[in-house]
Amino acid sequence: MPAIAKYLQHYAEPESQWLDEFTPQFNYCLAIPMYRESSESLTYFCQFAAQQQHCLLLLVLNRPDTDNHSQWAQQLIAPLGSPDWQSSNQLLRYHALANHSGLLVIDRCLNGPPIPQRQGVGLARKIANDIACQLIAKQQIQRPWIANTDADARLPEDYFSSCDTVDSTKSAAILFAYQHIAGEQDYVHTATQLYELSLTYYVAGLSWAGSPYAYHTLGSIMAVNYKHYAQVRGFPKRAGAEDFYLLNKLAKTAAITSLQQPSIAILSRASSRVPFGTGPAVQQIIDSGDYAAMPFYHPAIFHYLRAGLTIIALLTHTDDINAALNSITDPAVDNALLEKALNHFDISKALSHTYRHGKSSQQRLQHLTVWFDAFKTLKFLHFIRDNDYPMMPYQQWVSNVQQYAFGQPLNVLRLPISKL
Image 1 (cartoon, helix red, strand yellow):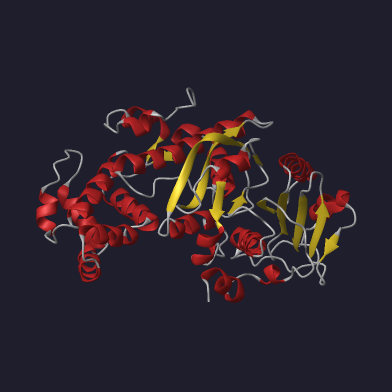
Image 2 (cartoon, rainbow, N blue to C red):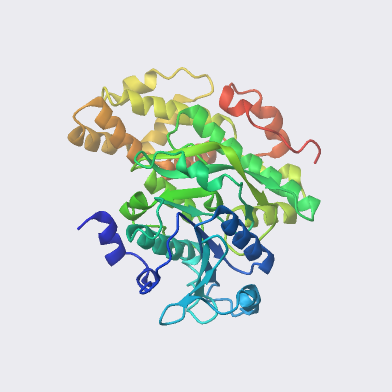
């Protein structure tokens, strides 16, 4: 059985099977989970879809099973009126929009069962993406990309045409550039800029170190290839970090393509709707009352990552770990700590597996790259942090980061907070 058919039959959510007699055709699709959002957000996306033409919006109206409040959802969809099509159980409701576009509302809030708290936004995204995958497989959506975003995002006019420029035979996902924009409260925007800087710094540090997992992991900026999405069995059903874990799996199947242009604008706002991510992080910065104390990773940890990746590359030619360690001469790296970190993650076991299954250095590098993935990279950095390089407050980081020769990737950082 082909991978897509197998996924849709055995692993996709039930909603993807409720499309009998749903016949409209589209070029593009866009999945958006909404929880406690305003009608203004829905109005914006409906207008955007109509302007794009032949675009299907997949709106997952959702709430966790710990929240009984649903009046916001009724107010959100009330202006839509009667649907042009609905599933037999009435939990999928389709509303035609202008220019051959449409809105498919998936109800996991009002009449449909709420989302289990532990499965959160991950399940909400999976439902929408599974439906999109089904419609692409049925050729009711022509393009292979399932675009994803959030209610606080504002998309560029050339959003979908930019996806068309990416070779879908070589890429598993597309990531758009993004920038947070000011809302009504300046202090929220300041906190958001600070958090955005920490994300940019982290990705830039990964890039400088040579990590193949140097990309942003925000659900609001990604479009996934439906074939690869099915291959990795979709979004993980988690209350947070579902975007990180999906991209980590997708990166092992094909390229993750990061676009420099166009850029998505994301409204700066604090939030407690998910357990972690941008909204809660911004709220935590605000609650701290001391923006300048926000913790940043010590720049030295990226030197350790670079050294670790250098050793991994060397070990594709030789299994002599000591010789590889002795080749590291970076004065910012304590080789004893580096060796401790590699042993902590049992590199000897990984090498043994690699040399059993990889006949060439290129094959061995592929095995080790999959082993030392984005999640293990993060844990490696945290190991170095916890053993000798604790987080440092923003003001200290600003002066300290300049002392480390990170090269061009970190020169693109903008320090938006001049006075805190």
